[in-house]
Length: 309
Figure: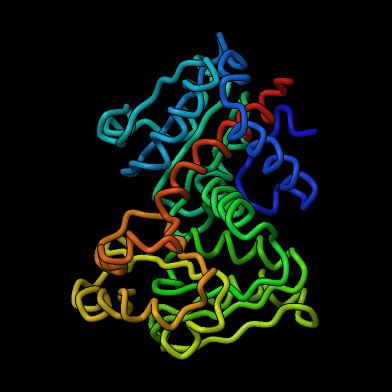
């Protein structure tokens, strides 16, 4: 039963609950108007202490398409945080006005802290470099809709694997499905942190196959899924390091010629220059479909956490 729960970490959901949410999202995709009055009278509070386009707007679109309403702020400076109000006081206050909350914050662990003080369900919309569980749900729905399954896939994760919370969340979750193989493609400086590898692989060492490497071209022909990420300027303390690494991996039409005909390219967006515009017309590029699936899966999650039948 998901009613009244918080979603902070992808591990908060069992595999069965993941399937439950994805199944509901697929029903919404098939018949969206059947759900257009499901949340009438309910309010979603969006607390975004960090800039966002897709995540914030897809949460708002999700609630509006369910017949509900939204309130909130899109940056810390437009909230009382700019006056020095604590995160705890902000959560306690907005929970008085809304039935469910979605929060993004630049500090790791902020969502876990907020969950201790909210009186309504809280969804982590990204906490620093930690986790982004609704992006993971979006990724899972995209893979299911395009590949038909979440098992026995060769998945390449490429780019900024050190700071990318979307990568950390997806990796931890996809290791829970049988037969998946992971190719972790990044420069040495941006490799998956050891603590993420421990959480994702150590307990499942006998059943999870993964390889760390630097060249995308070496493994493109093997991939069923290629998950591209941008090198995130906002996560670097040293701009010189960012400039040196930002163009490490660029996917273009020439490289795509070496990939399987049914490989799919995912990207959590925003894109900077790591995927050339020429790739957009390739039917294997599904990252804008992925953005739309994010709205549907958030609709399903809101319904589940509010306990709406």
